[in-house]
Image (cartoon, rainbow, N blue to C red):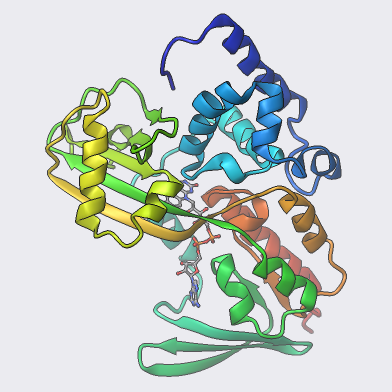
Length: 335
Ligand SMILES: Cc1cc2nc3c(=O)[nH]c(=O)nc-3n(C[C@H](O)[C@H](O)[C@H](O)COP(=O)(O)OP(=O)(O)OC[C@H]3O[C@@H](n4cnc5c(N)ncnc54)[C@H](O)[C@@H]3O)c2cc1C
């Protein structure tokens, strides 16, 4: 990402973050008591102010971190920031043709999956698990040897009335970021020489980032342009009650004030997602470590999702594998 040329002194200051990322490399994946103790309790804003100063924090680092995260990074802990910065710097992003949907379908191949059911409650006892669900107007029940709960975490405490207190407390106190993304489809790809553009917050300007999505194979028709425009949290909040047309209008007005200029989109659609991503505020990793190491546990129940292993589909899948292994080990052997 590039905005203006950096002054040499600013470039040197920003280089400190690279040194920090290298220093903590490999020690930030939970559970890692050393990193948790050192960086988890610290708010990112204060930590960045010490490392690079308030101006670079406000104008450069936080906008870029928010653009990469897809939500305002301001509330994260220093540990959470370094964790995802490290993953982004060291990994080469892979894009799945057709998006994440086909991956889920492929993983489900060979399993006996029942779709279209909304689970209403899950109760686990020492001898098995009971699930109540609704499929359209019909209510159903299922018995299972054990359960891996992989629904989005804000709903878990409500779905599972018999959680032990430590588990309930953990799920009830999680924080999530909402996300408003406006997809702009254009007849022709605009000449934006970057993949991702981040904007520092400005009065009267709600766009936080533009992801130039037509570079991703299969994301847009050949020759067409596709921009994913992410609104800042404050703008998303302000426009909570606005219609999709109003949100789209504000975004196009904002873009017109940048070097992107005036756009005549073929189509615009607005996605407003509540609880779109887990938010690792200060002390989150310490709470997560306590949760993972809890002694009192609901029987025959394990939990999976990107809350447990870091943001993103890969993390969510790893945590599902981990939860399934945990529960398989805990089950009494069949004769
Ligand atoms: C707009 C957007 C773009 C993203 N892009 C990427 C990307 O490019 N790459 C990447 O790696 N990650 C991406 N992510 C993140 C990725 O989607 C998540 O990290 C991942 O899906 C989390 O998996 P999960 O299993 O924890 O939760 P989810 O994928 O949210 O799965 C939870 C499931 O539980 C279901 N559910 C909830 N309640 C019930 C109930 N009562 N009964 C039955 N089912 C229920 C939900 O319908 C949902 O299907 C993106 C996320 C968003 C929002």
